[in-house]
Length: 155
Image (cartoon, rainbow, N blue to C red; front, side, top):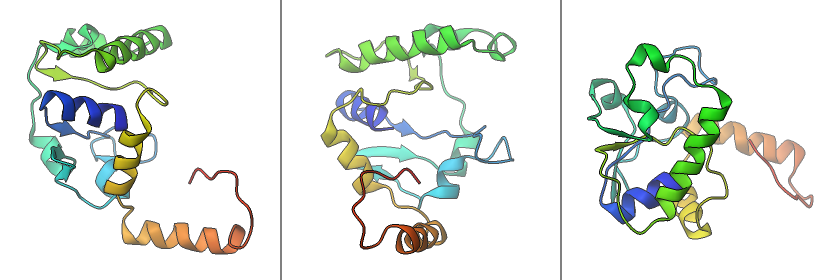
């Protein structure tokens, strides 16, 4: 998310957070982002679409990486090699100084550690877990971690 946000910021694009089909939900057409995080419309000046509006959008082609320009029936199965190739293509694009000619850039590969810490900090400052999720995080912290030294927690 931080890498995609930084690219959108640099190129003047809108950031669409489309987490439909998440392995964390049983509803394939539900965008997971607003299930877990409070809705946002902007991250440091970048317009964000992350709610049910996603279901009304038709993202315009051409797409980058080019694999996404295939007919949808050809996109059902994405082998690991393709995901790794996309990750590398996206990394190169995001680190380049120019924009892509594609109308839609699809960032559907893990780009951990491929952006600067300031972008990550901006995302962590900008997105907030929904109150019921924050309450569960706080309870877990109090029960297991409060008053102890902690190296890292992934909740």
